[in-house]
Length: 179
Ligand SMILES: [Zn+2]
Image (tube, rainbow, N blue to C red; front, side, top):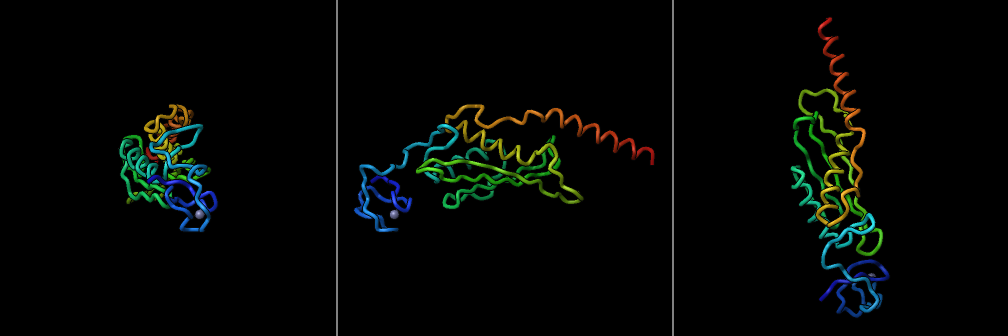
């Protein structure tokens, strides 16, 4: 038995079913879109089932050394948390989301936000680090799915911003000395 996509309501149906159990539309196994047997990456989209992408997201988060918090294939989201590491001002909470834009074709997006750590008054999104970490996960997902290395752009201005960050710290240091 293979799963196919109902042409009327978009739900998954067995190719052996005569009608869709959700909407009652007749199932035409010959013309319906079949669930891919393996995940791939084509033209900026992941091709597979939501469950396959959920597994991929979990694998990518683990590969990036972040912690998997929750993966929900039916909602199409995976959440993760990063630790405080060298070059990181605080942990990041990130979410990876996948939306089906065509049968079994998913667009994956991600975003992150900086966590406020104990004793830290303001959690700024320095260097846009939080979103960069979500992009790291998506980049890993693309790599595991066999997609091109340049599918997710690298943060090209990271070095410049880092330099500004360092000089700001030096100014703060100098002010502290004057006081
Ligand atoms: Zn249906």
